[in-house]
Length: 127
Length: 127
Length: 127
Image (cartoon, one colour):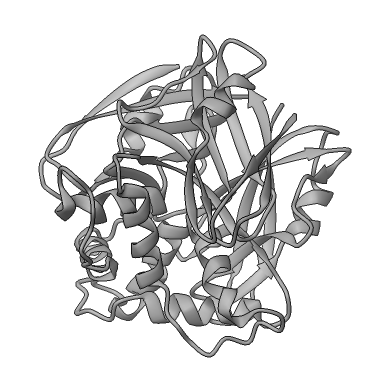
């Protein structure tokens, strides 16, 4: 079990963490499990053609209902929490020869929903 | 592989299952995999500040399109099924010393979408 | 680690891959991890009562905002990418006696969002 730290730079941002996670793989082959220790960030995969990160963030913003939320500290941040719960905070990726097995355009991404912040991930291996 | 039973009490409800799942961990360290054996419930993580459970359920309700669905038995329940498929029915959480490694405010939650019911989970360990 | 190929037949389609994945299980008991090597497809579970596949696809279509996207090659396909990232491209399912442990109506599904295509999955086992 290892910790990875990721510095984010914007309120909302899509970060490609493929290389960083791959470099931390401690064995040749297995399943890499990543878990983000936050409730306003998420992990998933995506194509990262230029502009697609911003397209994704715009779509998330447009999808989230703007209701009268109850959250005591930050009702405006409720959509950030809901996106984190919907997209999910854990992902597992197969790897061999210390490289993730991914599709041609597929990248492992961290979705920052309430940055900028220092985000922490846990990387564990099942094999 | 163990079974966990969770009793839900409302049509829609967010339940914190962190302690219950943690108590069932059979070893010190590893990755805990939870899988819910239903198509109108889901597993994810969330901050559970007071009111955030109801905020989340309101947002889910507002996001789901109200279309003329085809479902033969219960067209009104189609949004429950779709939320289950979108949020997801499996989650993996790293643990050490028989405690989940989570963020400060992060909890493991079961999202009940068509209760009240007895829900069944499977807990398995990879290590 | 094994590869599974799935042929899809429509632009958008829900395919039940339970039997195909189950047949490939190489051991008696464990956790089966499936990962789809694409950015316009997704993996999850669902009830597949007649018509529910089309209900799900209609709901996904209605949920996706139609914005002026930046994607250089295919701005119309941005919703396909976003659904893939939201639903997720990896799933883990417990199994015993070479059978998935699933709910009565629960099936493992591949959601095709930009077919028809040949889709490739990676199946790995943790146990």
